[in-house]
Length: 247
Length: 384
Image (tube, rainbow over all chains, first blue to last red; front, side):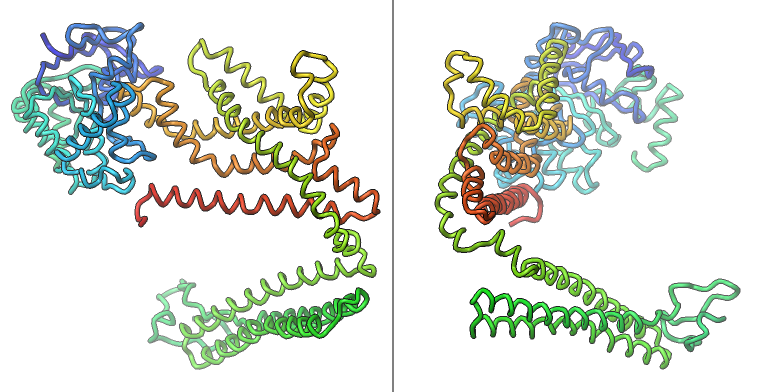
C-alpha cells in the first residue's frame, strides 16, 4: 500500500481551477519529485497534503487513512507530515535552537532537556551546532534552510514535503541544502519535493511527476521523463528548461 | 554654441567642461554653475540682522534682570558671553560669501569643475546660515515673549518662590496620577490583548465575539475620556450596586481609563498581530501547533515587538488623561495646583504639574527607543 494516496482531487481558487482530478501515489521510503511550470499547483498540492489548504473533492489518504475533508484533526496530521517552505519561514524572534525545539516541547510535550539534546544532535549532524544560539537573520540563506529542515525533522515525521526549498537561495548555497536532502533520501525518508532543480530530481527521485493543467500529466522514472518524454507538453516544458541551461 | 552670454565657456579639454555634442543638443549638466554671490550677500545681511536683534534682546533681558534685582557680575558676564557667541552666526555667511567670490574667479579662469565645487560649498554654507538664523530668531522671539509687558509672562507662569513653596505639596498629589496610570497601564496591557484576540476570533463561532469586541472598541473610542470618567465616577455609586458602589474614587478613575485606553490598545495589538506575515502562521501550524499556541508562541511575541512605539503613545495619552480625574473630585496634582493657583492668583503651580508630566514622559520615550534598538541589534545581521 502506498504511504500517500491522492485520488481524483479537485480544487478551484475562485474561477481558476487548480486541480481537475489529480491522482498521485507515493510509496514508503520513496522520493517523488513534482515538476511543472509555475502556477501549475505544485506548492498547493503539498499544502493540501498537510492541511494548510482544503480540497473541494476527491481524497488524500496517508497509510490508508483519509486525511482530507471535514472532521480531520489537522494538528495531529501535521505532527506526522513535515513541510519545508521556499522562504524558510523560521521564527525570527527565536534562536535556531528554540525554533527547532518549539514543536517537540509544545506539541509532543517532550521534556526540555530531551528536546534540546535531540535538537542539538540534529543540528550537529548538519553542521549548524555553532549557530544553535544565533537568531535566524544572522544566518545565510543556506544555513536558514538547513535549520528549517531540521525544525521539520525534529518532529520525526513519517513524510517530508519540500516546497521548492532551494528556489530562494543563491546558487552557491544550493548544494549544502541538497546534500541534506540526499542524505535523508539515502536513509529512507519518504519525501515529496516540488522543485526546479532538474539535475537533482534526476539524481534522487524514484519517480518524477509532471504537473500541468491541474493533473499529473506524465509520470515515470526520471530517466524516462527527462530523456524520452512521451507527452508534447512535457517535451516543450523540458525544452524551455534546457534552453535556460537548467538541465 | 552659447551656454551663457555672461561668462566665458571653456572650449574643451577638462572633463565636465568637455566638448559639446554636435548639433542643437547641449549636455545640460556641463553648464557653468550659477553665481551664488547674491544669495551669499543675502545670507550675510540676514545673519547680521539677527545678530543685531540678539544684542537688542540681551539688552532687554539685562533690563529685566535689573528690575528683578537679579543683575550682578555673574549674570552680566553670562549675557556678554551669549552676545559674543551670537556673533558666530556670521561665520558661515561670511564663508559662503568668500566661496561664492572664489567660484566666480575660478570660472573666469575657465575651470568649470572647480568653479562648480566652490559654488556648491558656497550654497551649502548659505543654507546653513539661513537655518541657524531662523533657529536663533525663534529663540529671540521666545525670550521677548517672556520679558514682554514688564515680565508679565514670567511672573504669571514662573513665579519661582511660589513654585518652590508648593512643589512638594503638588509632588505628593502627583503620586495619585502615578498610582492611577501605573495600575491602569497594567490592566490595559491585559485587557487590550483580550479584546484584540476577541476581535480576531476565527470562524463562524467567533463571529458574535468579534461583533461584541468591535462594538466595544467603537463605543469607547468615540467616548471622550472625561465623560467616561464622569459617568463611571458619579454614576456607579448612585446605582447602589453591591460591592462596586463602595469602590474608591481612584478605582473608578482606573476603571474608566482602562476601558477608554483599552479600546485604543486593542486596536494597536490587532495591528501588531495582523502585521505578522501569514507564512509565520503557516510555518507554526504546519509543525502541529494549535491556533492558540501559534498566537502565543509565534505571532504575539513578534507582533508585540512591532507595536512598542504605538503602545507607548497610548500610554503617554493615558498618563496625561489622569489629569482629568479632577472632575470626580480626586485630589491629583492638577486639582491640587488649581486650588493653590486660585488661592494665590498665580498659575505657577500649574506650571509645576506641566513640568512633572514632561519629566516623566521624555525618559519613557528614550527608554523605549533604546529597548527597540537593543532588540533589533540582537536579532539582525551585522550586530556585535
